[in-house]
Image 1 (cartoon, rainbow, N blue to C red):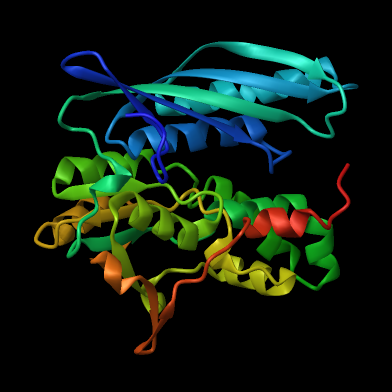
Image 2 (cartoon, rainbow, N blue to C red):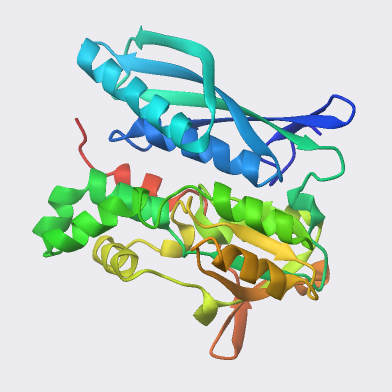
Amino acid sequence: MGPGVGEDAAFVDFGDTLLVAKTDPVTFATDLIGWYTVQVNANDIACCGAVPKWFLATALFPVGTTPDQVERVFDQLSEACDALGVTMIGGHSEITLDLPRPIISGTMLGEVAKGDEVMTAGARPGDRVILTKGIAIEGTSLLAREMRTQLMSAGVAPDVIDRAANYLYEPGISVVPEARAAHAAGGVTSMHDPTEGGLATALAEVATASTTGVIINKDAVPVFQETAELCATLRVDPWGLISSGALLITARPERASDVIDAVNKTGTPAVDIGEIRPPEDGLMLRTQGVDKALPMFDRDELARVLAHVSRP
């Protein structure tokens, strides 16, 4: 399988085994960029039903970067790989002209037995839509880390900002354990990691890939307290905010409760938020019994906000 809307990794056929390949840069974060890069690439491997195993990184640093700064980034890469049981097998690093901040592009490789792979295109009408944790986890952490001064000036309490910044670790942006548990439970038809554009864009990508529609119960979608406060303060819509850390799952209706139970047993909460529908039903959001079109975002809300912020 090559490129496709909503398909975040490629499959290479090696007979009984499929090699799953994923590449993704991290461009928003300046803090803990190495940790982010490993996690977001591993997430997409896990969403294919595969086990992430090998990682390469291309690290670009601005002129003036010190050896200590480079070492910190590579320490982050190593620690994140170790935590996931992934081996960092190579990559590239350089000092790059006219670069305002570090950028890392990661490539993750994994394996899955042929026939056990999961594709975003696998969703079918009647499937239940399941979400883990809550929306905008990564975006909340990035807002707290990148815009602390602005948030404090607006009156957000330091302890709220600190808790939001720690979303990177708690509830965490990795979805590898819950993806493996959901896949093992059986009945999963697709899994997707909501990244740029948030949950709204991820739902649109699932629908586009699978040629389906969807209806989502807005009141069932978890939004953490810190996310709600930071987004309200900065006038950010959490539905369009980068959401690594949540896992979007579709499952056959008769197996959905088994999938939810399996995920819950990992210590990660999972809830049923809606249903996959025929394509003619469109992409709908139900709020207090009223249906309206799912919101669409031309760019991620984080990119929109950071575009107007002076950054070092």
